[in-house]
Image (cartoon, one colour):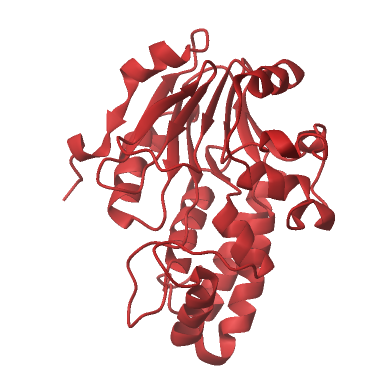
Length: 295
């Protein structure tokens, strides 16, 4: 791949790219356990669920301005399983390659978080978005593009997903994750999961702490306060919810975000000052419909 143009239809290119990007995710200096730590300086662009929206991804990359400063960071989540298909199959593996290329170009600045759709694809669990099993359609897409090499491509895609952190957080308490365990899960959830490398059991449906982290819903203010106190969090930025206007306050410490649909939004945060409150952060929201794309 080093001596020719990358082609996301060539199995060898995709395998090499994703292997390199997986190593960067696991080994960059900010990675500690299952968390990407971001210094309290520069700028963070937080996003919600992306679901293979290439136009919005391009806008996110432009807004992140990663080339401008090594202390500019972008958090990405829920990359695959969009509404658009080709010949009835899902080709959203291509979004993973876009993110992998961004990781290689900006190691330590790009933070793709594990989300429930990636975990479902990796583990072979059925998941739906607008009808039909998306994990099946994803595999059909790999078969359509790569033929007999589809399994080799999936294995490296699986490892790319396994390399994703559960969260990205700043040193002063801004915490980004796809979701958090639901209240009924807390008695089974390992609150120390962020401090260690993830094990196979963590991904197990219903009982694994990584599974609970990306599938939880219905959080209460009391629960969020308890988690925040334990983890030293000032504000949670989460996805895993349909937010009609792209972004909304989900509780005294919580902002919920979508970046995939027509009202999708992102949240830029200046990291040089104190962490924002949920109310003050809302003044910085950028609706992607108001952002032009470069020609």
